[in-house]
Length: 178
Image (tube, rainbow, N blue to C red; front, side):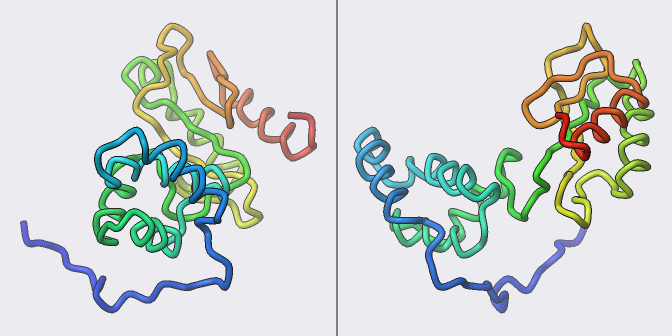
């Protein structure tokens, strides 16, 4: 297979006037995390978490700021952020629907649950609704095999989920009841 190249050397990063890595975040990293590690590179994961916790994702400008603060190459930051699935490199919806696709959930019909969400929201897996309310993803395992199919709606675990049940949960969120 041939390598697929991308024009990263000519990529443009949109910048805003105020930094994403705030003075408070820098202070937290300096006082809480950096003393724990021999190298600044070891504090990269906490730095990425700080930014994502504040903004819901890790913008490219923030990755450059983290690289500068920790005295790392920008490539080290993007390589790390893109390696771990827990970091969001583009904005996600206000609500995250995570559908388990493990073997137990597959056996119990997770595909029908996923399809119900796709039909109700008009998005595909990995996409966010136009109103910014929902992002749909699939995960390998939510650790709830005995109650499959399992779905995580934000921080709430939905067990034995049916297509009708997940649509009802979405409608309740839209109605402000969830």
